[in-house]
Length: 260
Image 1 (cartoon, one colour):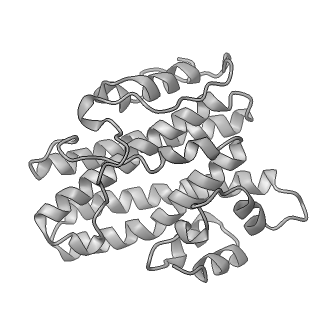
Image 2 (image 1 turned 30 degrees about the horizontal axis):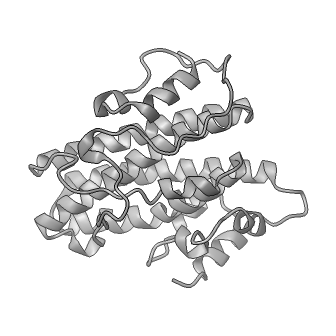
């Protein structure tokens, strides 16, 4: 199967099972085709992205409350679904990107599909179906400002997924304190994967920035407001995930010092 065909299926289908299914055969990239920038994803009716929808994900402090835990799981599933769609979007938007970069996008896309399935399974264990609650499309709103592969990794890998290195730690610990080890185990696995996703963004940032440019300055220059350093961290900063992802000491320190 061609990467382009896989990406278009993930992006455009309204069938959730199809959207979250891994490719059934090896992926090739012989015909990436022309650039295609979708305005939004195909979704089943219950998961359509609606402007102004009130769908904030509760803080990890709500984890002990079963009702809040359901909202948390639903919101986190939608975050992972958006991520899968956006990695598919990037494969279609940047057909001329280096082959290794495109292979990395495809690998992460499949991780995001798996993460979505994991959250949905936990959500269904609570008696709620994915789509029973409203969803937001915060990630999707940023695509209008993404004009290059470097823009994409700065926003997605080094901002959204970077912040998730904090959020996943906080939500995992909260789930364990709430007596829900199954949810904690899911979040712990996602945290480990996010480290590799951030490593992917950091690796390509190093390749694309100028030899005399600082990673911090290049990253910031490729963010469009309201994306900024504080969006790349949680309320509690956890250094270990960034160190494991290979970020340099200066970048980590400046991120930790960013004001919330």
